Image (cartoon, rainbow over all chains, first blue to last red):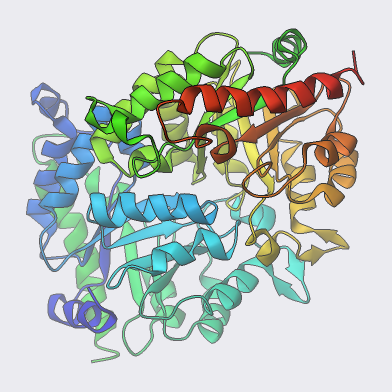
Length: 270
Length: 270
């Protein structure tokens, strides 16, 4: 999906919602545990109930690797099941030396068929650039993350600039707004303005709305650009709204609530 | 394997060698491609030929994920095949928010049965601490990496101290020398002395000897501590020494060369 296709999809669906598939056997409805592949059955029902309301699904790879080979099978089936019009975004936070990054790119873009992957910047350019060689694919670099540990190193000042700003400005020279996005946590709304000064055109993948406490209005206030430029993710706040037999309908209702707010926000640009 | 057990194993084997299993179907001997599981067959032969010469095997997870479900099966078989007396070290460079890190810990320590995992520090304490809750397991945090991209952010100065030193000093308070190690690339021998000032007792996992150009003597000169404190890794320099039918013998010969040097180096502490 190109930059313009993504923006068009957002306008058509009146949504910039990403739904995180952090599918955990201890949290899904118990009646699914009797099926052959509970993780996939859960994801399938969530996707069926919500795909018109979102523009991306973000499987969190840890939750699949935790179940070994079986988990990886569920992941493959899930990726294949995500319909057109929804970005297949692997939340993997990979990052390694060049020859290894090349293999991660092969794993996620070719073998699994994802459209996008999250990547950690600590190891610098060769942990990112091999991903950029795949036309039509997206590399989503960690900028300012939503968790409490973001305070440990991301705000360290160097030359009067925090580390996360160095990451944004330097890595934005490696790719373009058409093949790179940034993770910016919704828990830091006060930083969105300065982030937009550094990367005005890039899409930002914004976790932390919902379970982690971030606010959609705050994020949109400074994060929105003329091509929307936001993918706001919610995982637990949508998929675990109910763990009864109504889980899919409950997820739809939580997704609809966010999409309705997004519809309003999009009026500002279209 | 505890700190003291690791040191004893090093003394008994006269080796602090880690062998990296970056197993790539395009580089292994062609005659193995006809077997049912070429990746595992290759690893098995390498392990059979070298396990008395090393104290750790380090499968590089990207090389398994690149083959999807089949790759993950080969990885499981490989981990199970690594004999006692060798640390099972997953080179995975994971790092995420707390609830996700917990799942990665489950994936690598419980499900796969690894003894150790490499972890990226960008996201701070909650990307590390869930790993530390597993007694007898090791978390190997990226300090100063061996690749050219290490220049991009790891040397940024903040309060007169480079980022990688902030990572070492802050994260060394999260765990201890008995459950945490650091990745320090052999390509930065000039930095080992200062690193040892910050983490005198920790084991350092040192990639970059061989294919990446680092020198064992240089690393030992400042990196060695009274419990050895080093695991020096070689991957391509050992496992791809030959791609003929003699590949395992050639790998043994390359490993033996390093082990012989390590034997001499260990005379300095025992």
